[in-house]
Image 1 (cartoon, rainbow, N blue to C red):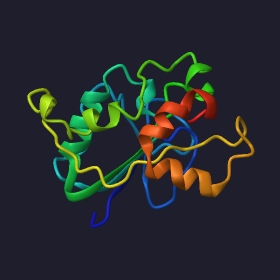
Image 2: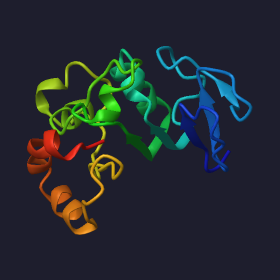
Image 3: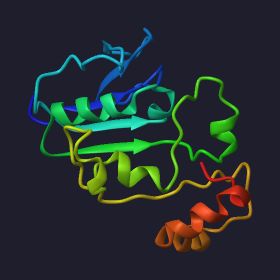
Length: 165
């Protein structure tokens, strides 16, 4: 397995060229896994992990990140998408148990010195962007999105008005 890629929390969506992993059995799931337990993969065996809209469903995202770090090869990438805690997408789903904001991302990724004692990982945060749900805020333009992503503190402040996902 030279370039092994995981799609964690894939649900029924088949992602070609990925090992599709989910808690529930769906037609397109390759591996069943409970993300609150250890991942069924060897240490440093994975090149890329994609976890889109999964962490907000986990009671212990720190365990998930520890396990991701364990199975990723050196130089591997972890791609995560989560809804912003102030977004309607987050608030409307009854299974959401973990909240994420601009301030939580450096903490979760091990970027803050104060949390070194709690985690076995220290990810290097390469990029952090907000996703703006156009269904809730249809007039926002690509230019405004680029500006807000250059100034995430401003986006955090405006999130109550912009419906950031």
